[in-house]
Length: 331
Picture 1 (tube, rainbow, N blue to C red):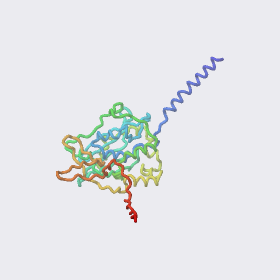
Picture 2 (picture 1 turned 30 degrees about the horizontal axis):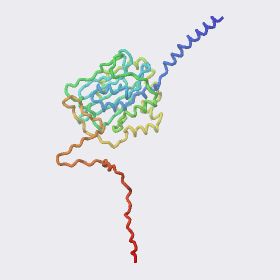
Picture 3 (picture 1 turned 30 degrees about the vertical axis):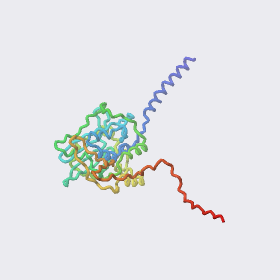
Picture 4 (picture 1 turned 60 degrees about the vertical axis):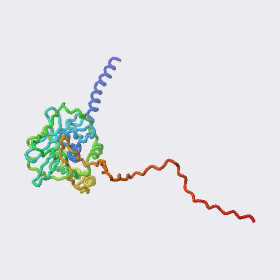
């Protein structure tokens, strides 16, 4: 009888342990809405700070800043984002793709950089239709023109093709677990340069980029999961911009003011410099650096705002001098 009871208990334990383990591994902190897990304003911001596309890819996958929260393959770790580029004339088409599995990639956004006829450079960060819905486009206006522009327009420019793929990543990259939505929102806001302007539009300006998209576009995840497209995830909503306005109208207005859909008061500064002879690009991130003041011969040193320390001798409180009273004369 005891043997039968022991066998029953063992069978119950074997049946419950796998189910418990399976439930534990499937718990993730990622938001069900895919478009909440990669902020295009953050993408536009770090693009303006990068010295080239290799540096841009590193910033996208930096485990310290953690700008992405995408886990499309559902393995419990944020996916690596690779950067691919193709060029035609004065147009640079840059694709940001999620590395899902071996030889499988999914476009999440593209950056379209084009020099116009009046010699101005326009930038549009276009969200992928599968991820964000049609017509979700961020137009950054940089206060300080990005150094990467000077790299794009040099003679004999070689387009950037990420050398990394599934199972082979750079040394600096360490995958991290997805954040809950509110924590990711708080984390990514810190990494957006609020001096720039981030306007949203539904019109793509570069016709050349539309043609170049056919060469680089990858949609392996979208083909396997058509039910997870933005239109199927959000019935009756056109794109992410309308989704934000529907969910939180007040929050959308506050975000528009904070991220620069209204003027921040900063004027665009033409202060970029071409790369130096050593090959290192100039720093035009817009962050203020302390200036070293050099004094010419015979010129007085500028007075410091700091007061000189007083003498160490304790100062006694001042007292009014006492006038000695005259003594009466003796008769």
